[in-house]
Length: 480
Image (cartoon, rainbow, N blue to C red; front, side, top):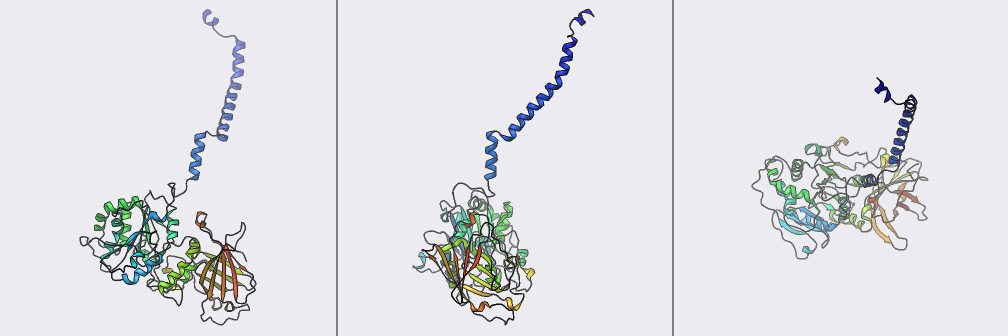
């Protein structure tokens, strides 16, 4: 007992330690909280760099080198029977010396020496008789066309990032093809295109399929993987109708979904494209198709000349082609709808932007069904009241004014009968010319998608309306 008692600490020391321990404990907690707050306010340098990299990474990562026209190989599917007429569409957009790619035919055709300078190289597709085809409504040329990308890959073209497929009656706006593809990393697997305007077509085929007439793009590494397995894939789908659904079937086996870009247009409609084009979504116009089926884009012109006239505006501002702007002539109570480089429409009365931006049904469905539910897009009646039948002004000419540094577009009225109207407001029939002013805007698609604003300007010339189109102001909205 004596020895044990001798080793105990004095009572005063024990008491002091007991009093100090809570203070030490709270002090440690305080120091820990201070240190933690510093970490929150001043994170380590490595963590900061990681966060910044994450925030700066877009949905479509870049590789550091922009895609240019020289990086794109166009693959055009053509028929020898239709070659003499369809080649005229190719000449409209093909740029010898700049564009790369080829036309793929089923049989040899005669080409004039002068035409060789205005057309792509021509190749004959390989024999496909070994592949089964059992669809009674289609044609086995679909198998040949579905293999064009793989055959183009085997040509061994240097520095190709994308293969862009289209028909011989597909017209591309090549500047916008580049703009759209430049959003994506060509080193990844991408299958880019769009659906049909026909709901029935998409049901019969697939909403996940890129329609070949509207065109689609396949990245180079995906084309390589496709070429390895495509022949085996084709044999598994003898009952499919066309080439584009065979392509989509192989993409499904490769686990690659369709990346939709609404600027690719199949145009599965009949009639007048005024409603579709003037109601174009806020995205670059990439392609148009089915010119032998639809009416000429501009009344009074042939189909080829009509397309050429539309493409003339791309010389001044390809990024803004057919982009929609909505404004109002408040004094005369008119609604004004501008589709730049294509047409301007004036409607009596004030219609809301929500209604005006919807394509009007100036066309009929691919299956000629008078049912608005047959479309895969929103549409509206051409007019809800006879007085609101639009007065249409089609582009006549477009030029660049060096002194004012702006584009000047002249739009002339399309004369047609209008129903009598008793509304107590001025009639647009007194207007014969609309002058649209705007600045070049090649970088518009590098910003967030937004329509241009437009304003009706004062005019001293009788029968002439002036309209300005351009960037919206900081607080500018369409409000009446």
